Length: 164
Picture (cartoon, rainbow, N blue to C red):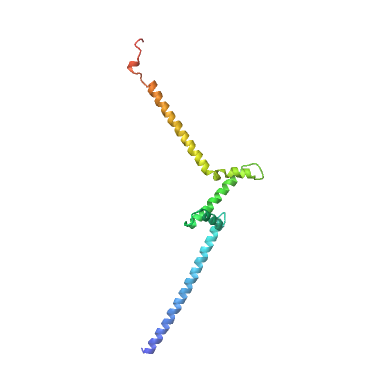
């Protein structure tokens, strides 16, 4: 083979290689675009399933969290679902009323467990402490009864009456 033939063959191979690379990059670009479209469709489907606008829930979360906190996507979705469940529970309770119009007082009563959770927990702690005090009193009374009345299954020999 002459030098010219070798150069021509090399040039042809270079051109073919460049075409292959261009085609691969175009295919990769197309695949990346398809993957992005699929990801966007999946996100849209997830957004459709959410009870509230995700942006609004995230905005409210960011308002109430420390500024250095980052919120993972799953947390955003689960918070949205949780708020939706709370709404469903409140509406179920509102449906228990026999009236056709929902009044503010009914709403207040239905949301009470969610709006006063701290007070409810404090009341729970107070009741548990009171029950523990009652239990301690019962234990003390039980010890007093046992020590003063000496309740036994068998009578002791000293306690027997010699008269009978």
